[in-house]
Image 1 (cartoon, rainbow, N blue to C red):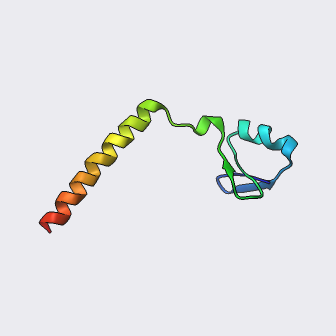
Image 2: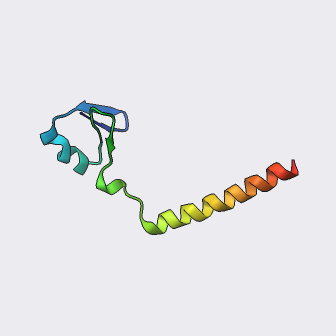
Length: 68
């Protein structure tokens, strides 16, 4: 498996996985599954803001396509 963060990629063992996750690295398993560090989670508040912004931008995009 590998640990990646920004432009750094390391080959790691299972025993090193948690240490790299704690330091903010993504862990890429040999089967391609990506495990994100706990700090990478998005808060519910931020998610709701982004969801509302996405809906607003989609509506604006649809309106601009219809008028053009």
